[in-house]
Every structure is written in structure tokens, then in C-alpha cells.
Image (cartoon, rainbow, N blue to C red; front, side, top):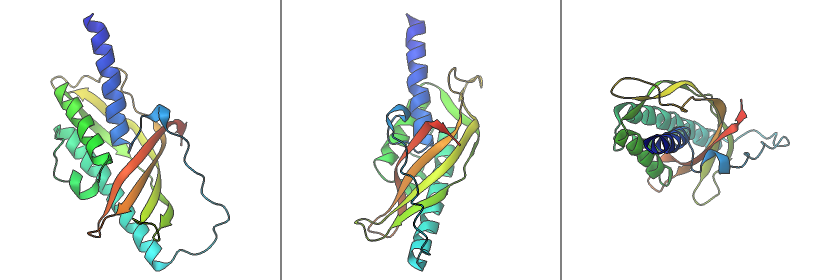
Length: 186
């Protein structure tokens, strides 16, 4: 009986933590493929669009770093999370980190990222920037804190991830949604 619970916990934890740290807003199996980049968009981005893209990529990099720090420290209230994340993604990341903490697991290793801006919408309310990333989580491990044993079934992959950065009324760009497309290697 205990083995069944252990497997269930491990499966839930792996999905929750990988999903949250890969920028997921939905479980990987329920996400659809990202929209392809329009091939016909040959226009040069405006200075405002370029600045928005740079700000969004900075927020995305900050989000990944804050998530790694919070996961390494088992701290769902890590102060850097709110600097780079907005809801609903902020809450999902916190829940995943807290779930891992309650089960004695932390993240260690390296998460590699190759993000790029796929679209900028400054006319929307609110303005948004779409980001596509090739996340390499093969060196990013979920381990038990007490003995550094790898949590079974928690092997990372190299896969496509998408995220949305939104400009909030105070002018900050925050990552507030995303998805891991683990069925799409990159």
C-alpha cells in the first residue's frame, strides 16, 4: 500500500515541479503546440517593440533564476519570485516548490535556456510578449534533501517551452503564464 502512495506522490511531484520550473501553466500533456512564427512578418520591429522584448527576456531569465534558487532552498516565498512572476504562474510555482518541500525534495543542477521573442503586442490590454525557449533540464535533478538520492521518475528532458510576459500597470514586465511542451524536443 505504501508503495502505491509513494509512486503516486513521486508522479505528482515530478509533474508539478517540472511543470512549474519549465514555465508551465497547464500539465504538459494538456498543452497544445505553440503557434508557429509568421513567416511573412518581415517588418523591422519598432524601438518600443525591441525594448519590450528585451524587458520580457530579462523577466524570463529572472524568473528561471529565482525559481532555481527557490527550489534549491525549498522556499516557496523566496523574495525574488515576485520580482519576475505574476499570477497565475506565481501561485503555481509556489505550490510546486511547497509540495516538493513537504516531501523532502529539492532541485539541484543546471537548467539551460535558449529563449527568443516570438511576438510583441503593445496594442493589447495589457501589452504582452510571447517567448519561446528550448529548455534543457537533463542536468536539473529533483533529489531528496536528506541523502541526495534522485527522485524516481524525475529525469529532465530537452524540450520546447513557451511563456507570456505581461506589462503590469506599474510598468514591470512579469511572466504570468507558460507551458512546457515535453512532447516536442528541441
